[in-house]
Length: 183
Image (tube, rainbow, N blue to C red; front, side, top):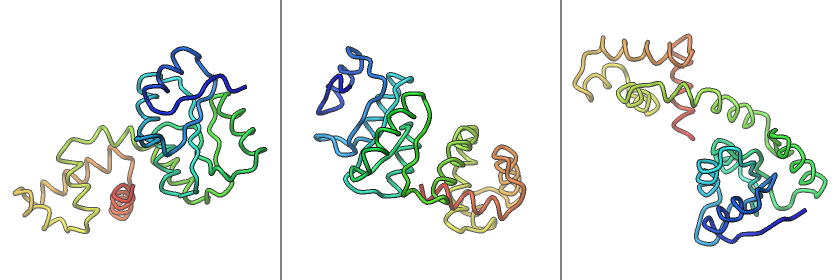
């Protein structure tokens, strides 16, 4: 049953507080707001909020951003009603629901990002800075010169990053840095 509607984030927060819906469906394009950013704010205020984000078109990047923001599902408005109903039931049971058109490799990337995002927060600012420079294809020597530190210090930071993220070799580190830069 539809228990309420809202046109913007402010109304949404009031609706959630007053009606406590089992599932909250958010349009990616809210009046004067972004539905993904609004969902982040809703989840911050109501961590148990179960959100499905709907979009007029399916976009893999939007899907990844929506799911990373905490939404339990990202669906195209053109989805079959049976899939929407299935999504509502899955999300109501606190499960994720993945759109049928979401390619396996994108789904895998989303799941990897969700697992590693907490570990990424464990990196120091300098380690995050080095990871960004790796993603921009800078060598150890370039990074050392850019940051005014020795190459040995850069290598130590790389080792620490790999240990914190559970990465076992340089190729994995480069792939991870590049992947994180794309999101």
